[in-house]
Length: 174
Image (cartoon, rainbow, N blue to C red; front, side, top):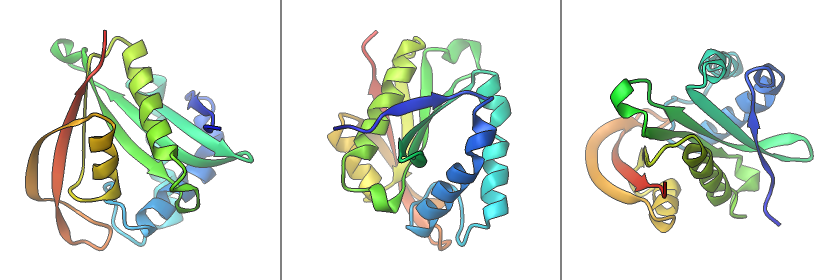
């Protein structure tokens, strides 16, 4: 059975900050290159999530979460473009799965949920980037995303080592 994925409103986000911060810390501690260096301080992780509330409230960011026993085990974000000529596209951001929930298809479930949420908002083109050769890279390729290029030394992993980043796109059925 696939876990249920639900969208968090801006009003629900404050109540989920502790779980989301813990998930972010676990993801960074697990070596995922998602924009943070390790070790990530809990206060910094919470502050980062708190800073996302205005974007959720404005409809620029859709945050979806999976739960197991009430605890958040994964999340995916869809960041909508704010330029008038780009309303047809969005970006998948911060796809995270807690290490103890991996290997069960949750990443694919979250990715599909993000794609559906984007399509429901009229998005026809999705973009994302990830560390080349990472488990996420494998997931995106197997989920029908098209790699469009690799940039060497684009982002640092949690240890601070610069890594290659692969950029992907996926066209959605309109």
